[in-house]
Length: 108
Image (cartoon, rainbow, N blue to C red):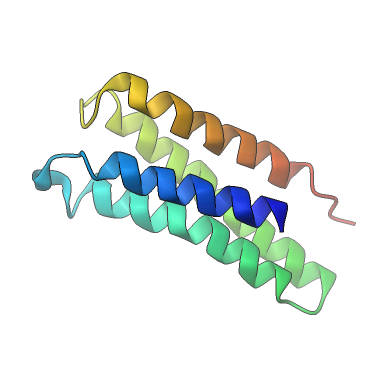
């Protein structure tokens, strides 16, 4: 459950950063970042709830894909000045660390 807790923390921090995005982005990157970040711990939780190892692994892989999607959206949001550039650093670091945790989970 450590990975799930990290995912929840990351999602909360993504919500915090998107709160300062301009209102014009509410249905753009704000919404897309929020959906991606919530999908990560949601898929991790669903994987934990599955009864077979292949299903468990499948949901962790989906969470990894969600993380990569989220990372791409954060990369785009930074240069278009949706928030101060330095605010993206800790969130992107969390995304990177969570990706490493998921990749390091044994899949056999």
